[in-house]
Length: 347
Image (cartoon, rainbow, N blue to C red):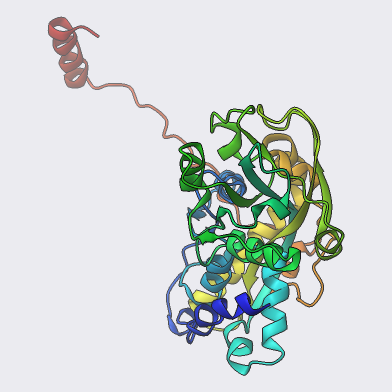
């Protein structure tokens, strides 16, 4: 677990949270991930949901889970972030023995459990499994991403030592793999991930590595990627997965304007997710179909503002569509103007 120490500087750098001191109304935003990932698509689904309610929810790209977690804690106007469950477990692990980490994560709460994210490892065809990554060049995601943390842990637990691990985002790693500059890369994303759907991947040259190691399947959730999930992947592939979780902050509605407005936003979105989950499953990313809203990760509490929005008597603060003004008949002067304009330019 030595590699986890690399994360501590980022965690401890999360200094005092600034937003509670700001006596202002809140803008709502959600931290997601890269443009080719599942997080950002889930964020857009939630943004559309809030838009139907007459409210805005900014969808912010990010490096991934760790950045999202820390942003919920310290970034103003950031009420939501999507985080991997193994990131949450490691936060709890370090918080138990490090007061600095405990302070850094104070106030972060669960909003909703989401879906399982598959651990994709795309590699050259001559690499048969994880063990064959020993001595190879492997991209493991960028720092502050969940992919980086999960890839580092999986390699450690499997006892695999690549010749080189590169801090490269999956979207940049794919062209490097095609060019022969690396041998494989990790990507933790809910299938189907658009990077693989739209990546023009040659199934004769590359494949997804199976992850069937008993140790890894004990630490993570065993999962099977159905045949044909991606165009280059004709057969089922046994993988492992982590849970994606929507996180928020414990806002105090009795506090300043910022806290009150943020708490209302959290309550409103929570109410909309609960009452319109069927709409999300029908119209949103396919992963919504597997969301179990009762599957709360252990060790973390649900936010009070979330529970407020789930109360049966709560009504989301939706804005009714603005009524269009009734058209008034033209005056004679305006009618003459229109006739003259149309006579020259046509109408």
